[in-house]
Length: 254
Length: 266
Image (cartoon, rainbow over all chains, first blue to last red; front, top):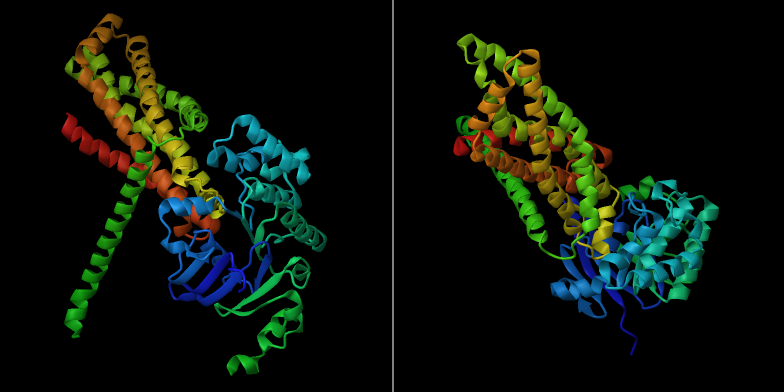
């Protein structure tokens, strides 16, 4: 019998007014893997991610964590579950009035009963691991794009989550820094042993660090498989996306 | 449907829809306020953030409130003198200035000053946190955004508004003294004597009660507008609309509430 997926989207629907963003999404995420969701801009990839952490509620369908429907959990259970998740936002969402150190320490200060010196130890550990010691006393507005990503990653990993969601972690970075961030995520995923779910546009670069790739198109997952499988896939939608081609007028009309 | 019934139905539909929208908005604002007020008593108590907000709302408003108080008192002294002197009653200037400040102008002008200075920045700061996903980030970290962001502002406002009002009143009374006694040469003893005899404790407490209510109004409106800035428009436009609404709605509500409270307290 195959191992139960860590996270499952089952027939998930979500609309914003007349805009039907998700139309029956089915997706599984395996424990300890890096799953990347790809798709065109504005297709609903971030919306899909936000459902898992409870920022959005589906109109229909189920989202299961370790086999349990997250929507049916009691408040206390949902609170416990939230502690297992971490979310790295597209725009980092660092608190502009706090220093890098305070930003990283925040989940521990607010979410745990650790003593001040224990928190300091944990924060300094991750600051060392991510090599951001030089900017510990700086404010987010003083950081470069790449450094902000590392700080956001440090904050996402500080409370040792089981699952980390990365919402377009390389947006706005140059190709070299994109590659650095991808490899940084892969390295820390191995180091901290978390499950990663990532939204990205960076193909084929992101395939290097992914165990599984899912293509979201027209509100559904039209392909899900390993990077090798997607590269050799002959599905027209997949080929068009991978090769960066628009739908031709003939196809569009048809 | 006939043309006549359409002509009658359309305005009624618009009116009905507007009434429903207003009722929903009011309900949402009240629920927001009650949630924040209830969470004041829920730990953790973030003393550092509360002190930060007291510094921001109270300390940083001190200069503008003091300056407004001084000139309000001076104008009251001058206008009061020229009005009262026509009836030979200039001796009661001290009481007139003090009562006007304690009952009405102190709490109202202080609240309006704080709205302009602090209410707008509260709405903008929280609004920017909303559109830059910082509030969502709090949620994903299992930190209650209302408890973390809004509650310290409520506590700080409830402490700062009455204190600033008291400072406004004191400086305003000094301003009235400068106009009446120093410039217009009213006898200082007469001025002070009528001030002391004309004011009762109820005048002081009603002013503080107003300051307390205005603190609730300004904080609720400003924080609510900022917290839901994303519903007002996209990005900077939403924050801009939220900030404008925070100032306009707070100011109007301060004046309306002042009238209503005065009707009951007088």
